[in-house]
Length: 141
Image 1 (cartoon, one colour):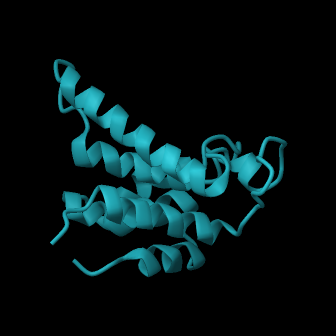
Image 2 (image 1 turned 90 degrees about the vertical axis):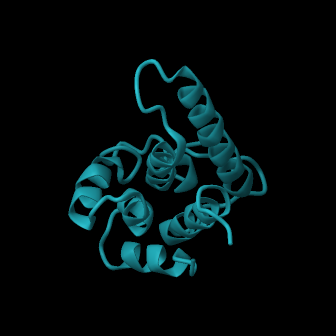
């Protein structure tokens, strides 16, 4: 499959919120149409409805992880465990690259970003998550 990283970045630059830019770019691979994907991810932009909590790009990536290996029923405890492990891995890698998964910290609006890390434009966080989606969630040739 051809990389969609730049497509995700362009979606953000064209007006999608950060969560939508990540989620919508790959949702079709899981049978979700663009309109439904836009609606599902719309609430997670700017750290959950603009409240600057978990970065929307991380939320969009986590939603894709749920489609990738999430629990399909309440009885699917192994699925839940497997999915939580996947989301933790993705979040830890994002944090290792950027210093946090919190929107407010990433944008320099609240304290907590470790020394050596600086805020980046949101498009770069979209890019990071798209790369992680392609590395960990998509089938490799």
